[in-house]
Length: 271
Image (tube, helix red, strand yellow):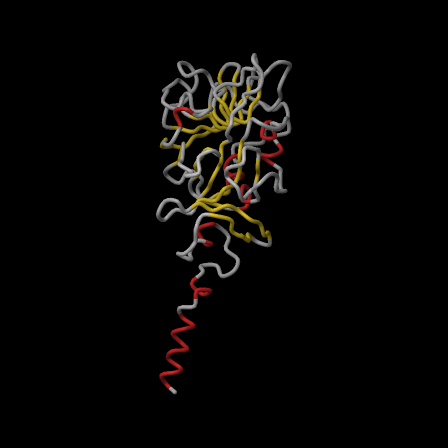
């Protein structure tokens, strides 16, 4: 009888369900992937009372990246609306959250619900999810991405977000196809506004602005309209005027030859 009780106890202790860090309601890809047999793919998360699906990437040992947003130039400029709605207010899923190969804008509940330390950017046409850019040094400070990006202020409609400066930055490392990717043209440039190993937030220089400027900017590095959320509105704001260009991502916002026709989008991940 004692042997039977011992075997039952051992069986309960090593139950796979109990090995899950957060049971049946993981709040991040890290929690969902605490089961070591997990693979890349779709997982159900629950944060507070919010249940939603995300795509988790575990291509590198020990990684647990959650797909939270996507930027495309093939559809409506959702990220550059004059009200800044997707950055600040959007609380409903838009787009396909569980397929990183889609070339269309997307915002997941994970953008405003999942917290982390770092973020990275990949291309939708790269099935290996090799990071073009990855932050280092606890860039997010255990915040959600929305909390990080909006912590610098509220810049809806015509409100200018900065003048000849960036409001913040994080150190990054580059990789993958970054040298041939739109938005990364100034990645290796050191300018008066920012240096090559930075991604900077809410930048302005001369006629240009960007929500997230990749690499150098300012004098010597093509001003500030390169990266993600770029504008050439003669000041740094979400408002487009006349012919002025605005793109969800790119190397510049000048609109002389029409909208870029990129065959890929940029995926944003957090961990």
